[in-house]
Length: 359
Image (cartoon, rainbow, N blue to C red):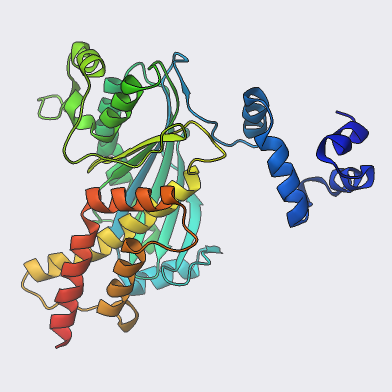
């Protein structure tokens, strides 16, 4: 559209549009103008909204039945390094979070696989989390599941060695990320909307059913007929929790991870919201796991004053209590991830252990 036509379309003056254009990428419209633009985008055609998202490099809504499986795989690899080491490492990192209760710093790192985007987040409580983003276009869900398990063989040692080097530790020192939670953001797939699409995402959240992890040569695919049969007859598991909203999104959380597809981008969760929840859960899971290890080793667990049992009590409250500003989808997402990760029980146990050690 011309400036005049676009102004008429939005119901604003020509001068406003010219001001936006002259400001370039660095210009931020006023809140009332942003609301007008949001409304215009929401009323646009699906094709227009897809082009807009692609122009900004944002994930588009899931397109069921479009042929190829396209998934952004997000892996979260947490390592406990202690509050003092975290303080030292954060002093060398630029970007700091504005979150006051779970303070962190982050930095982009080079990964051995050039197609992988890696961000290291170091939390003041003593946990470092590697966030790996790895776009995948597999031929089947089975192929994606096999890739996931096989990639651990390289991703986990790489994360340990990279963190050791950043800390300046002796080459012989060992750091072992021991838990990986995956988040799959699904943008397209060959499955029809409905039961088949739901089954596909359930399988993504529980990939072990498609893989022989005990094979002599390492994780190996089960026969393709297994996946085909499950997609046809349906698949469910008692530990899978749904947090999708009909007509808006499909989302499932399992012990192995989360699978999510946004069918209506304006109303669904964003990838950033999912990532933020996963990072919080993984950080606190790793922190409470360290306390559990000390107890199991017969030691009295201790932490810096800022991260004692009161810190865990506050974390438990934040993660299990709905907030006034949260949408129903946010609440469902957090509840599903909390339940399948078992974090609530871990936080309570770690809180009790720290309180007993102080007493």
